[in-house]
Length: 170
Image (tube, rainbow, N blue to C red):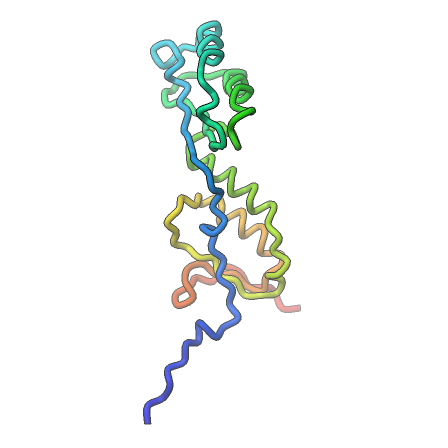
C-alpha cells in the first residue's frame, strides 16, 4: 500500500512575504540634467533657469522622477532643488539619484507605512525572486520592520530557504 504524499509546506504556518506585491504602481523617469549643462559639465545659471522655465513639466504627471547627472559635473544642490519646484505640481515623487535609488525611496515609504501587526510571533519567509525591480535596500527595510515582531525570518522559497533570524527564547 502506497503512502500518501503530504505537502508539509502547504500545511505549515509559514507566511510568505513577497515585496513584489507592494511594488508602487506608476511610471518611472530618469531625468538627466547633463543635457542642460554646457558640454555636459558646466552649469550656467541663467541658461539652466531658462531651460527649466521653458520645459514642459506636465509630461511627468503622476510619474516617479529620479534627477541625476550622467557626467561627472559638479552640480550645486540648488539646481536639483529648482527642478523639484517645477516637478512638484506634477510628479508623484522626486528624488536625486538613479532609478535604483528611486525604487529604494519608494519602498522605504511603503514599508514604513505597512501594518504588519498580523505577523506578530509568526514564522515569515521573505520571497527572493521577483519580476519587478525590487531594490536590495527594500529587503533591509523589511527586515528592520519585521524582526522586532516575528517569531522567525527566512529568505527564499519555502522548499529551500535561508534562515535569517529566530526570536530568542525567554
